[in-house]
Image (cartoon, rainbow, N blue to C red):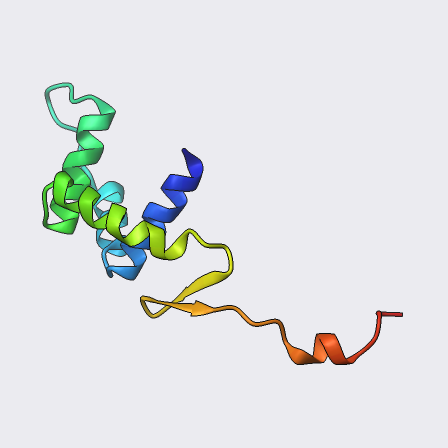
Length: 95
């Protein structure tokens, strides 16, 4: 579950919505009627992202396969192959 939460946070960051979602959580006001935490969380994300949760989930599920490969990192919304610096190959074992 934590891994999915991490990737969802990265997804929001890449979409430029992480700050809005964070601010929505930070500034939420307690209501008069009880609202279960899961329902309140969905409402806050939908409001901050400006889309229904079904749309957000569909976009996240389409985005996730691009970034789950540990050999690829995100850079301005595009997967970029990681490279090991050549200096690490050229110098021998550390002393």
